[in-house]
Each structure stands twice: as C-alpha cells, then as structure tokens.
Length: 338
Image (cartoon, rainbow, N blue to C red):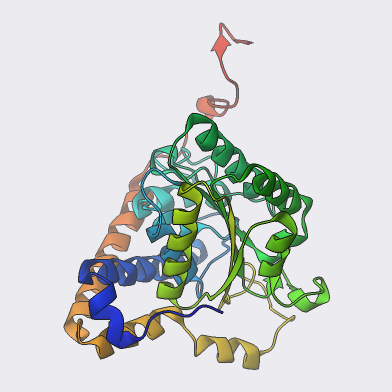
C-alpha cells in the first residue's frame, strides 16, 4: 500500500496554498454533509441523504490531482466528489432542497447532480453507472487527440457489476485515458465485502485487463493525491488506464436513518480514530507550516460559506409545475414532440 510522505517533507514537496486548499475542501465536504443531514431533519431537504463523512480524503485528494479540463463521474455518495471538483455548495444545497436554481433545476436531487462546465458528468443512483460514462468520455478524448482524463469514482460493490468489467476491458484494449477510482469502504449497502468478494485487494483485478492496480490509504489525502497524479500523468502520456483502490470507511450508515445492524460499534470507533481530517490537521500542525489560528480561520470560512448556501436554498423558488417536462425531450414545437 502506498502511503503519503513524511510530515517533515511537507515543506519541500508541497506548496502551502495547496495544503491549505486540501484542508479547506475536506472541511467543506465534512461540514456540507453534516449540514445537509441537519437540514433534512429540519424539513428543507426531501428524500434520502447518503453522506460521505469519513471519505473526504479520497474525494478531495483525487479531484485536486485533476485539471479543470479533466472530468469525473460520481456515485450515489457523491457530494464530496462534486465539492472536490469545484462544485458550489450554494447550488448543491439548492439542488438537494429541490429548488429551481439548483445544479439540475431541482429535478435531479442528491443522486444526480451534474455540471458539465466543471467537468462533472453526473452523480449516479445506479451502482457502477458512471463507469461506462467515464470510459466513453475517455474514448472521445483519445479520438480527438486531447490531453484530458476521465476519472470514475465507484464503490467496492461496483467491482462485482458487469459495467465495471466491460469498462475495464474496453479501456485496457484501447489504452484509454481513464482512471478507475474505487473507494473501498468495506460495505455495499449493508453487505461486507468479505461476504460477496473472494479477494481482499480489489486492485489486483486490473491485471486481468492489462493495466496497473494501485492500493492506497484512503484516509491519507497526500497518498491519494500522489497516486492520482501519477495515474493522470500516465494516462496523458498515452499509457492507458489505472485502477486505484483507496481503502477507507464511511462513518455513518448507508443512508441517514440506517440502523446499521450489519456492523459493530467497535468497528466504527476503530475507524473513527483514523479520521482523515483530524489526521491531516495534526500533520499540518506538526509540520510547522500551520498553527491553530490558521486552521480555525479556514474552518470559519467554510461555516460562513455553508450558512450562505442554506440561506440561498431556503429563499430559492421551487420549480414551476408547468415546467415539469422541460428538459425531458430534445425539442418541442406546438405541443408536439420531435
């Protein structure tokens, strides 16, 4: 398993601004999720919330290794991926609240946020649904001769879906510039990976399709960032795909309200001790590049941003009933569908 660099090397390997942005975005992901959970309980947000609390390092570390021109596909647990790629919490919160100014005009909700201008091709409620989308995008990049990469986030359960194997096979044969990024949090809904998968390290599956599989500590943002950066460089050099398996853990249930009868409190608490944000903040302090005041200032800016996002969503109009079919069909004329 690849691990991140020693704290003493921070000053030599990373710009302070990059480290600060890593901390800020991870904090923004964490606080967005907690605030969304709170607003769902308060009635602002309808439907389910699948939070990624505990998985902030994978979302932010991978996304920051991409350029603005690169694209991602996400999952049902995708708020962190979208924020990591530069999504605006204001429009995300509005989308969760089913309000017209949301990313998908309040029609997609938590599971289907997309913003093509940011390279976010869409979150997906279907397990493994983003894999063929990213592979198709990568094929387009290669055919047009563009130095761009598509990264697909997916969970451990998706590696048992046909879409994973089809996408990996095609990407391997054609050496497409795609990164298969698996967030292995040990559970597919309530099923532990050992009950449905005969191997411990999912990354070895990449060998079957002729490209590298890399295992990283998914709670170490720098390990994630370095592995993704290497995969991006490899893809843009025409060397094809990479499978990254980030071993991580979600602190909360599959969805908010999940009784979590499938795992023990001892297991949860053991992973809580590996909290990626606490781990990173401790390392930043020990490096001497940041002090308590620096991190508190970054946290304060995040809270202000989320307060504004909630206020924006609360005041935003709901989609008009007469516009219910807008965007459903490619074109309409005089009431007829073409």
